[in-house]
Structures are given as structure tokens and as C-alpha cells.
Length: 498
Ligand SMILES: [Zn+2]
Image 1 (cartoon, helix red, strand yellow):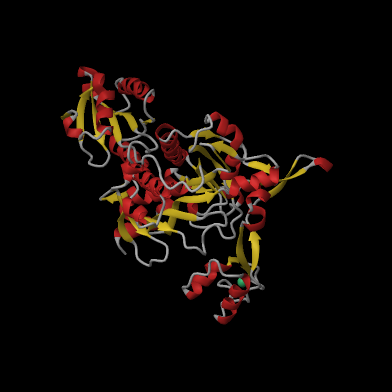
Image 2 (spheres, protein in one colour):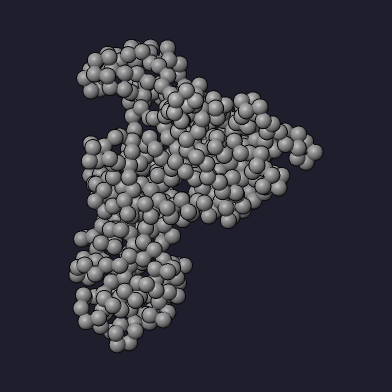
């Protein structure tokens, strides 16, 4: 087995031991589909989330909102989730094990079954004599299983039916009228919401990739109907990406301008596919593993007229969908208008219409593990994560060379200086080699060491994670030096070799 594969095999073990993430509720045996982030993972996820939020608010001018995750059932009747948010399921008649019908068919026959009717799936199961992989029992009739978590809100007779949201999108559509006013009745305008969503998956698996509770960053752009153009499209038109278009079997390298001119995608969708690739690159994702894929007609969500994903081709987990970009038409607002009896119509540019929506929907948990896979490295005696400084859990760490002769006092002083500006770790519990090793495992890009020379002449050592190169700089220019390295200047041009 190649080295990297062996390493990837251990990624969940490494994540657990180093404090990135682990299965939730472990002391009670765990519940599948729920994970907890440890001290490193919680920061890594926060930085990924902030990078997306900052991009959409600062660069795209989106409004940010935050809505409750628990709502009445009404919005989900309107959205169609009560009726259609279902997976086809079959259960073993002997041991009761549940299976997603399309998954088990694909596993056993090698052919996709998404979009097939229940009767068709029953027939395929029978024809191929597909049995329960666990006990060889007979599989029961295929049925629709709704993935929403339903509950009640309030006590007694006046309690109302509620649900945990299966996506943030609807909770952004409900206050549309207020948002439109706040956006000064301009169009298009975007609204970003980051938060938890819930899906009662039949078979949660692949660690963070298919969970029952997960974090999304969903951006809804409200636009006039049939909007074909996007204002900054020219900025990305020349960029290239691997793309698998609907009806084609082969992924081909394409310019975004071609994607549009060959009518595979409209400008708004192409634009946000390109911007998403840029964000993933900044996060440290292995660009060779990313591709664009257009949904087939038979797999597209019920509300969408065109959907594209950016996919990460993981060596361990297979195809991972990182972001979905969909033309949701006027479906959602129209349905909310019908259900709530509140008008969603606007008059813009002399025309009356219900706005259309272009949705950009990121999962925030999936990038965590795809980035870890992309940057995990093993070298001789050390294992490290080569995170870019912008998303690394800690950006800097400070240690005293030894725990005596006032070195810890000086190191603490440097630590206090840096922590005002960076996520900074402090350690004095072990040999210097051991402390470097720990920070390599955490993915901290730079370590600052205070030694006897520091007390004499005020210089400290900066050690770079990836190259293990060390330089000395004066404490007065330490922040400036760190920033120059983070901005891309080579470490050797920033100080004298140590
Ligand atoms: Zn069984």
C-alpha cells in the first residue's frame, strides 16, 4: 500500500488523538451520525467558516443573518420537504438492519438507482437476489423515509408541530420581505446564513461527511427571473477547472467562459463555482482532487432547474460534495407565498415578479476532513498538517527553551504580545523537540523559541513547520516578521539563519 494511503487509513484515529474530532457521546456508547470537535478541530472549523463568511460579506456584499434551527412545520410544508424530503429505504426482514435502497443496489450491481421508482427498485432487488449484507435475510419492500427530525413545540393542548431544519435556506426565505427592504429594494442581493441543519440519515457514515447534525453556510442570491449574466463574471472567465457536464462520461478541463458559451451553465452559477474553487485553494485543499459536476436530470433536487457541485475526490472517502450551486427558480418564494398568504412579489425595474434564487450551499464539516486529507504529511519521524496560516487552528506557538533561569517569564511576555493578534499556543512542558513535534501535529505554521540569547540581545528563533528552517529576529520586529512570512515572503529573507 502506498504510504499516503496507509496514513489516510489512520486519519480518524489521528483526528481523535490530536483533538480535531471524535464520535459524540462516547461515554454512552455513541450515536452514529454525530461528531464533536476537539480543541484543534473547533478552531479549524471556525476559521473555514469565517473565510466563507468574510468572502461573501466583504467581497460580494451579502447580508448575514441567523435564524432558529427549530421551527414550526409550516415552512417545510411550503418547501416540499414534508412531502418529498425522503430517501428510498429497505429493511432486512430478519435482523431489521435499514439500508438506503439506491446505495445497496449500486453496491451490489454497480449501477446507479437514484431516481428509480419504488416498484423499479423492488424489481431490481428481486432480480439480482440482493440480500441483507449482514445476515443474508430477505430485504423488505422499498418505501419512502422522510429525513426530517419532527417534534412538538410547547406543552399541552396548544403545542404545535415542529421540526429541526433540514437546510438553512428556508429560514432565509421566510424573512425575505424584511431583507428586501434592508437591501434597499435592489436586485440581485445576497444573504448568507451559517448554522446547524439536521437530517435523520438512514446510514450516517464516513465520519464528518454524512452526519445527522451538521453545519452549513448557505448563500441565497435573490434575482430577477431568468438572469443570465453576473456582474463580475469577467474576472473569472479565464480560469480553468475540471468539469463533468450533464450527459457526458468524461471529466474535461474547461475555461469558465467555455462553460457559459457552450451553454452548460449560466454566468451566475459558473461565477460561484469559480469563486468556490478559489476559496478551497486558500483553505489548502488539494486542487488536483477537485472537479465540477453538473447534476443529471434524474438526481437533481425537486426544487432546482440546474445544479452543480464542486466535488473532492478523496482517496479514503470517495466522492465528497463540498458545495452545491443551484438555480432554485422562484419555487421557494412562490410556495411560501401560497402557504403563508403573504405576498413575495416585488416591483423592480418596472416589472412585477417573484424573485428567483441562486443558492450557493457549503457544508462546513466536509472541508475540515478534506483539508486534513490534503495537507497531512509524514516525514521520517514526524507527522504534520501543512495548513495555510489563514485556517490553521493556531497560527503561532511560543515556548521557552528550558523551564528555568527566567526563560518562561520572557516567553510568557512574548506570548502575551502575540496572542493579541494571532491564535497563539503556549507550551513549556517538555524538551524543545517534543514541543515542536506537538505543534507540527497541530499544524501550527510557526514556532517562536525564547532562549538564553533572548535575555542577552532580545532576539528569538522563528521555526517554520514545513521546512523546519529557523531564523533569528529581534522581538521588536517579531510581529512584522511573522506577518511577512504569512504574506508569502520566504522565511530566509525575513531574518538571519539561526
Ligand atoms: Zn439482516
